[in-house]
Image 1 (tube, rainbow, N blue to C red):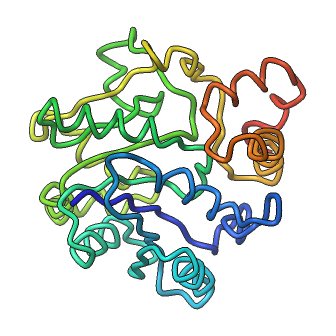
Image 2 (cartoon, rainbow, N blue to C red; image 1 turned 180 degrees about the vertical axis):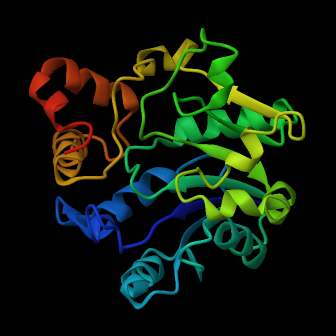
Length: 252
């Protein structure tokens, strides 16, 4: 079974409770779930959050949306994801970040397809964070904030072999995988072919600050009433037409 696990908590220091901030009277996380659950290759959607009381709202939202919820360690995200996959009977994990609400089901399906067809241990949309770029600077990178990672539960269980990674809060939860290509077979989906228009590594759609949320709100307010599953092409078209939106990207 393939599960899409959305990593989210409400105790963010930069923008607290951002996942529950509303756009068109709908929580941002709910809008993301809508886009994820129509993926052709996702069997189950699960909110993976912490046991902190502040995250009770996320469990309530999962019940309302009739999707899965797992509550585990606040600090050890990999342990949380691994246990969530076990509890929900998933042998393949799609890891998504709750501050990436624009993620599209077609992009998820393409990364899962790459993972399956290449018999990889790990596959992902390639962005400028990955060390593979040191050896291959010609790779066509996606924008930040549309990250899809796919790996097996067996690979997730290997996190205990790399305790130093779990202590480093600056590293991605999956860095122990993609930083060891000699151990794990790693594949990347590049921003080319059908995704050529997303070859904009200078752009970021991750919601870390209030102005990032305002950007995402502008995008949903323009596109959602027309098509609730609006494609990524619509996002980039809007950026080209409304240049002021670029000012809402990045850090404060």
